[in-house]
Image (cartoon, rainbow, N blue to C red; front, top):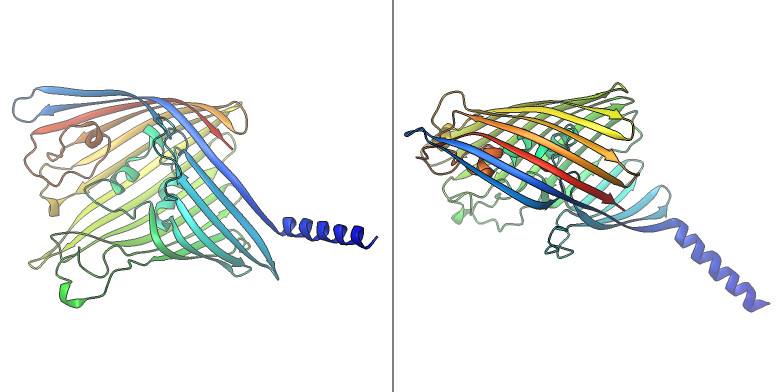
Length: 384
């Protein structure tokens, strides 16, 4: 009898522990046949050129990933959790769980909010992706996101930042939400070597915050952030981002909008200068039976005076249209088409990448002016 009671007690304890903690394996496998094309015109001869490419790509609707997350109830309203998430390239299988570079955090939470430590999304990126009907994924990604993540800005902390300490407001504030984040650069502070941004002790640092209100069909948020970027020529280079986004779900249609401003500021021994990128997005999603129609128009006007831009009124604009057909809660078929137009920027080479994005090039003297590019995605996404 005593042995039976001991066994029952052990089972009860095990069941209690299971009820207090949980670990979940999750992921997304997304593959698409994609076609990209770009046309350009030589500024001197007027001759046109064209590049195109077919590919089997991944992450056309949702980013492919594999992850583990878990929580533990510590009692008294306190809980601990972890989140480890890795990007995967299921189109060729070359990238798997080699690094948890999408997210790797551990946190403590109670009624006063959540303290989160590790690699995570930045506060300023959230508005770009939440208020884009295409979620900054695939050919439909807004040019606001493309500019902010372009090679000319060289901002590795645009989407995510490592070594981050973040605080998140609790979810019981009547619809108000928010977060503040600080990313430690982990550099050695040595004033004798802080001659350029690459050796500045603040290089790699990110600080940002986001505050919003979501209640019923309305969601609106504003975010601010600054990243100190590694640069081999400037004494200090900072990328400052401010954006305001909103969405409203009317039922038959959900509307999206965003305003964005990015300032790329250079401080040299001779002067202080900056490149400016001002953009906006208008979008909508319309439920149709088991499917969803998505559409967006985004544009960015830029002044790259610090980079030696030539041309008047330089800007890029993009129109995207897509359809998602849900076969189940976890599986969907999708199709996306997007068209980009670049105007009056003599720094672009006319390649596929420069035609689809904005932000120029570090070199001066290109004579090929990109005019347009088109992208198509036809794919399937399965989540688990």
